Amino acid sequence: MSVILDHLPELWQGLIVTLQLTAASFAGAVVLGVLVCAMRVAPVQVLRALGTAYVEALQNLPLLVLLVLAFFGLPEIGVKAEPLVTAIVVIACYEAAYIAEALRSGVNSVAKGQGEAARAIGLTFGQSLRHVVLPQALRTVVQPIGNIFIATAMNTALAAAVGVVDLTAAAQRVNLIEAQPIPIFVGAGVAYGLIAAVAGFVTGRLERRLVILR
Image (cartoon, rainbow, N blue to C red; front, side, top):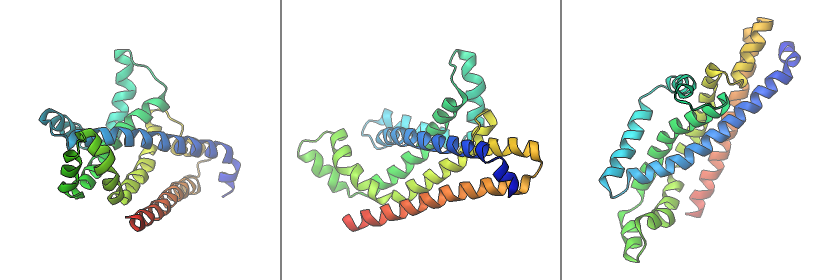
């Protein structure tokens, strides 16, 4: 325990980076996931095909491979960015595939008559999706979206492999100095567990609230 207290500033800074990485990646994943979901349910076949290709490609590639490819490959074509920015973009694109699929399952749970009624009163596909279908779909996928947030927080640990000094990287650095892996990584694991617990609590409260409102 004393080794954690001795290196608390480094570990705390790593935790802050982990939280920033999680929040920014998840926000980007939600925005991109909504767009991909819209493509997946669009009446235009080309858009559906592009959305399907995106989801299939991202869900069948390991996140670590994507991080390494982006970190070492993008500078080769003239695209340079800080490791933290690269990690945020890659994780957001990766998690967006899962957000899109969760939202699509929610869209499928909405009665077809809802969309048909929206179009019957003159709303376009985008307007009916934005004002009628998606608000109802979101209420049915609160728990899956919460699980994806937790997965995003856990996946941020992979960013340490490309130079981001998050909680995992900070723990590794402290361990190289102190050579006490058990207390150091148990402490890091507890921190990740607390993030997941808070996310689960908030998701549960939000889901219950939306169920009451429906």
